[in-house]
Image (cartoon, rainbow over all chains, first blue to last red; front, side, top):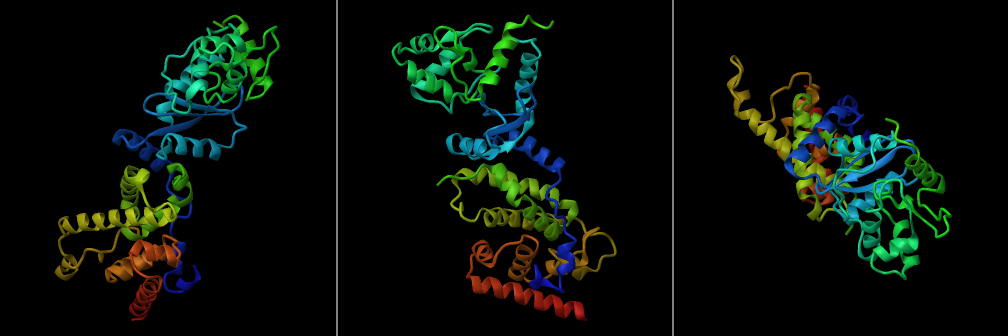
Length: 206
Length: 158
């Protein structure tokens, strides 16, 4: 800032430019959790499908985003729809990370943590909650899911609801296929749907 | 009005807030003040009316924490042998370990000039945002910075 030269220009130049140290930001996240001001915690979790962004409220898991979604968009949606008090705070996501690791290694068939449905509403929420009940390794048709969500004829709406799934993998929309066995669609891309179905077909690794 | 995720505030303005605190309270206390300021900011964030000047809003909170830290330091026992006049007016005057002596001189300026200089230089605020933080006109903000710097210049020339 040249209007300070030469009085304090050198002193300004001597201040840290790199921002608060990472250890300080980690302490801040821990403290925010302890003080109850952290509404949405998020972290990156490595997976065979690429690095996933996972986010949780104090109530449960809110969001799993595939890497093709820009992080800024994912966080902005959480800020708008849940709370702007969003911080990168991996500790809260430790149980989710651990169970996802086990799932991808073929050592886990269901998830023990709770889900926070705050990013869903109306009929799509019912469709996704019905989908969450499909057991590991099985598939249902769009029509069956529509029926178990309470509207047997709303097959297209059920498909749209699945397409808006904020928690893929954990809410297993990959287990919903077309009548006759065609894969249907998948927001994360069909390759990912095939990968997940294949993972659930193969015998457990242990 | 839609507010950005708090993490985005830290990414965009965290460095300026931390720099401001290093200048205002010294490197030893800057981290604690930073944490206090961020927690206070998160507490108030969902209801803030300052969505258009979030850097200024954060710096204003950091400034309050800086003042708290100075007061806490002034209450601490004064080391033996320190001249009494420095101890008594010493809210902002005492030199800090490992700290550029220029900042100690800035701390000795009158409050308005002191904060104007810290916020403008270390906090990297525009004059418009500075005026909002200091609750004064842009002209007054500019004047405080320039008078503060003039005084510094005179002191350092002697």
